[in-house]
Length: 116
Image (cartoon, rainbow, N blue to C red; front, side):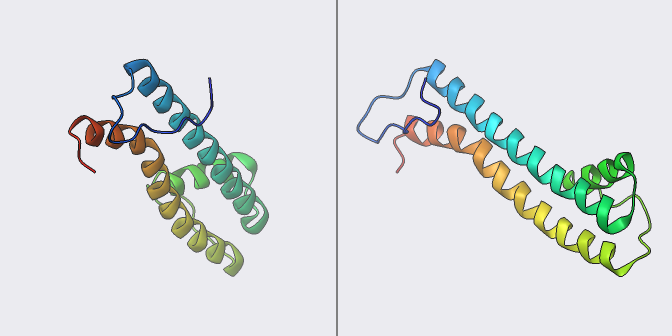
């Protein structure tokens, strides 16, 4: 199985459902890898800039990445600046991940209805 298969064009037949499921699985795998990387960045930043222990850093990074907001009250300027940048970065990552996850679905719908 090729990891990244080229999507079929307008003149080609719709790919079988098994190919669609493979595309969804690859998109989910890529999304999970990106989430893990971004979560690691957040955990590291909260640990080093904020002086939080690893579990509290995981909680802070998870809450920001999940869109829930911070849990702790930050004391230093460096952790406040990191939290601000990480929150903005997390929002953009969320948009990108949704694009990755929805690409196979939207392509299949548009291809099925022959919309270019």
